[in-house]
Length: 560
View (cartoon, rainbow, N blue to C red):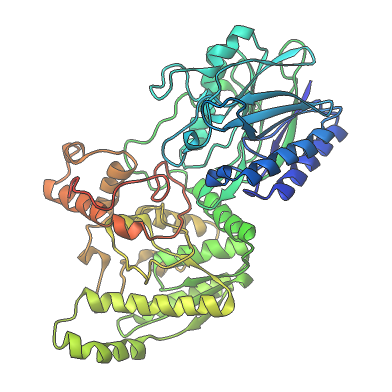
């Protein structure tokens, strides 16, 4: 049996485009003698559709797409993900399903059993879990079809009471097939392979695993679809961060005819979050994910041009470089807005960066605007000392100017705030926190530096002085980030333990951290939730990002 995997980038709710893409892959597979083609989870509508699933018209369009795709499934069988209606009155109205199409008919519909409701996932809000488990018979082979999370319970996951593969094994299947939409984080690729390997080892069956690729607002899907033989060797592996189609031949001996690409002993056996922050970990894939996140956000929204507030600092430099790579330098504009507190090298570094990247830029000094604001406010502020009010005023002036440019020329503002700043509230609402998309909001400052070095790996794109100088918001004379925050080498590891590691203050202090320091940092995180709640979408690259995957109350006293 010649089996194709179609790793594709879908557009949520764009049924016409998604269906045409699926049909094109089916036709390509048929032209190459394919007998079965496998697509990813909810391919027809795109993943995650969220509250679109509450619209009857959305479901009807998905069913209409299945009817179109069914007509192409004549001499080839098709496994494709789409919502299905629940015929029973009891339970939710929908299933998250895999349609098995052949001979222009719907031969079987397999429903997802394990509906994740954690982190970025909220599937139980919409779907009913499967309540029966049957194999799909095709050309003398018994296929155990599962959907994404279904293979992540090996029988010992306390979140779930049922292990779908345990149920399916009662029918003595020959091959496991999994349709997935498994999102990227810098640890997840190895974790995903380990899960496939664990399933193959436990059930002594080979697996075809088809994952989605592409970015959906803040969530990035990285592909990396695989085929693993019964000996836990990989015989086919599709690329990361790009669309692809590939085939394997599964013979009557229940073996794949393709040679081994990666042996079992080179495939991880466990999904492990590092015990501490490792800034360089997965930096190459983080780079790919951010570029894809920017490119897809603009492409799927119909945007063409981006604008970045370029300060001569590390964060804006990295965002500008990523934007130019994702969109092309001709579609990215930098706006330099120096004040009387800006150092000369900040302007010259920012100019050199734009020259290196070949993107356009303008310089709009804000000194006169700031002084006009001071004059206007003087009757109220009187002779009160310079404070955070004046600092934030500068940031908000810059925010107003860059948004004016965005409005006038139709460019989308890319935000440059990093995770360390967002965690501690080291940013100004309606100022440097403005933007349509947060590019670095899931990267700690130490990771941003590593990303800058990675961008410079072949040649100097980001001027070395930007990487080497002490970080500063430059909102008052001689200001450094360390005046308000602990050094990032101290701050970031503690933030990692609290946010990614979900460790409480006692555990973090027990790691050898100062009591007062931990208390101060965690209080900053909790009391600044109101700022993050108003922030733009953040491209997710870590196991725990701010945004839809981290929901904590704004008004709360825990650790405060």
